[in-house]
Length: 125
Image 1 (cartoon, rainbow, N blue to C red):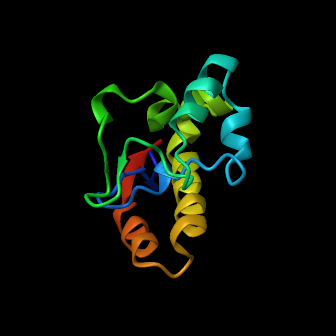
Image 2 (image 1 turned 30 degrees about the vertical axis):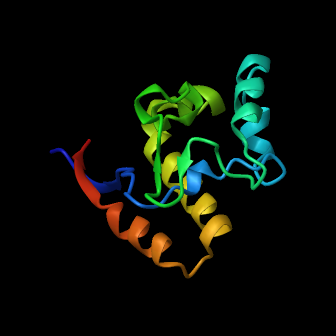
């Protein structure tokens, strides 16, 4: 008999942009996970205010979304940080929660919206 359980599945939310806060002093673990070439690209993307130069703060969206570097893609987090595919959703959720908290605060509407979006899915194993 197969058992079922609920697991959270990572889901991005619109009008957040917390991942676009690239300030290297606030995200040393992100910078450390990148190779030399990726680090150069990352640092070149950091504006004077610590936000990505491609982030549209008014529309809260990425202006180069379809052409963004691999390290900006959640699907690449596992490879960057050595996280197995079966743990990627939990890892991505945790990363986003941490980044949203540090960017907008632990009681922010953005964090509440993100947490609501992480709906469990029923899995059989």
